[in-house]
Image (cartoon, rainbow, N blue to C red; front, side, top):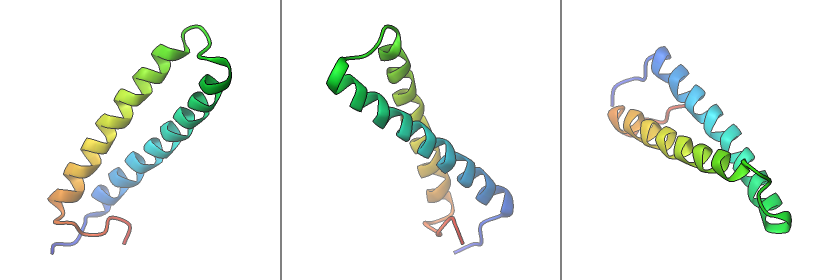
Length: 74
C-alpha cells in the first residue's frame, strides 16, 4: 500500500466534515417533517442536500479506493 499524501488526507477530512454537517441537517429536517411536514421550500433544500451527500460519498469512495483501502485518517 502506498502512503496517503497530506493533500489527500486534507481532501478526505474536508469531504467527511461536509458529509457530517449535511447529514446532521438532513436528520433534523426529517425529524421536523415527521411532526409538522416540510416548511415551504424546505423539501427542495432537503433534496439538494441529499444529492450533495450522494456526490460527496461517491467522491470519498473513489479517493479511498485509489489509495487501495488505506485508512485515510492515519
